[in-house]
Image (cartoon, rainbow, N blue to C red):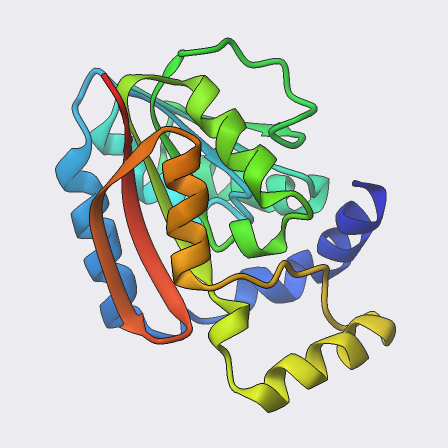
Length: 206
C-alpha cells in the first residue's frame, strides 16, 4: 500500500490537471451509470483519484463515499467538492481491505480505472460483492493490459523500474468477466469504446 500511496501522492498534482482523453466515451459512461442510480442510494467509489466523477454523480444519489490510497489526491478532491458546493460526498483515505465498511451497506460500488492497478483483483471483486446490498451494482471501467499492443506490454516494466508507472495487473476481458461471475455477479451491461478498455455494470444476485 505504501509504495502505491507514494506513487499517487507524487502524481496527484499532475493527474488533477490532465484532460480527459476521450470526452465522448466519458460522458456516455456517466450517463449509463446514472441510469442505474436512485435518489435514496448509498454509493461507494474506491480509487476515486481527485474526485471528479464522484462529484458529478453526487447529485443523483443520497450519499457517495469516495476513497483513495493517496491523501494528496483526496485533498484535491475535497477542495473540488467544496468549490462545486457538493455536500453529500465524503472522502476517506484507504483501500477496500483497510477501510472498516459494513457488509451489504451500499447500493452501488464504483471502481473506475482502478481494477488493473490492484495487486489482487479477485479479492477486490469479492470484497465489492460483500459490500453491496443484494441486487446492487458494481460499475467498473478497466484497462485490459493483456489486450494492449505488444510494445506497450514490453514498455510497462521498464517504466515501472524508472518509477514512471505503478503496478498493473494483466488480464483480458474474458478473464475479468470470469472473475466477476465467480464472485457472484451477472453482467448487466458491457461496452468497449476500444479493444484496450471495457466498461461493465455487474449486478449482485438479489
